[in-house]
Length: 380
Ligand code: ACO
Image (cartoon, rainbow, N blue to C red; front, side, top):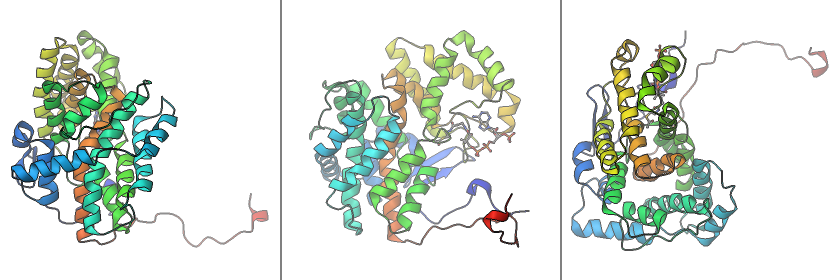
């Protein structure tokens, strides 16, 4: 019987100073600070600085980083032209993955592996992933993409680039809080993929491409889109009970946005996002989607199957309601997750390179042994 930990469950790949995920108590800390405090007070760029530099910035440092990200957030014309050639119904994460890969051709540091170059690329890519996401939302609707403004922070720039209007404070605040909550999360699958990639001596763009491809799956970041599609399938508040019985109790589906490898208590980000999404729904005058999600979560919390397995809403559950209420296209939810996670991914990539050892686990062979070679013509 193999002693392997299937899915590498609970295995540590080393030390990190970036975040502490306490799954038993449902706590999340970024470099010493509670996620609840950061979500309530911090600008996304403050959290980026915290992860990259290990401390909160003072006012000058924050403004320098905000300006650096905004000034480097533009994407080369060649990549914009490429985006315009993609099928309009292409998967949004596949678009982001391909565009980030193409950015490497035009990045002056793309094959420079020094720590200074990694930091420069982290600044550029953090802004560029937001610009690509916003550009794709417009291009596929036949609209011209907008260049990022140098005077705005990243969440305001995103809102500006998708709407073309002066960004509204409520939307900017909500996107900023969302981005702060999703910035970093220990050794999740996409971060692991990025660290595996740079551990071979490969470059930062390749590592981010690995991370985006990994985040795309519905067991990870893709769950936010799937959660919203599930709420839309339910359609009305009065359908929640029947849907739960037909599809979950008496079907073999999972509730998307519920369950987590590490959290066996409520994901603290889900608690903040539940409050935020409720407030946004109230302000929009449409409580339907929040109520569908909240009633379904309550049904699951009262159900023996979910209780026994410690299954609670994760970050993707209520963030789907928040983003939908903000009028973000449902398939763009996962690119928004990627935009937010850029600081975490790049911080981990730098941390990996700073004390690298090739990540190369093993596997227990359970196949046959000692078979005799048969020439092709003798095989059945
Ligand atoms: N609905 C119903 N049952 C579930 C759910 C769910 N959402 N999640 C897990 N379970 C059940 C499983 O069927 C399993 O039951 P069993 O022990 O009787 O076989 C048990 O709970 C444990 O599930 P695993 O799949 O072994 O747990 P794992 O840690 O491997 O998976 C995962 C975690 C992938 C997140 C899972 O909970 C899931 O599929 N959730 C839905 C998708 C989702 O929301 N993903 C986003 C995660 S957060 C993030 O990555 C940002």
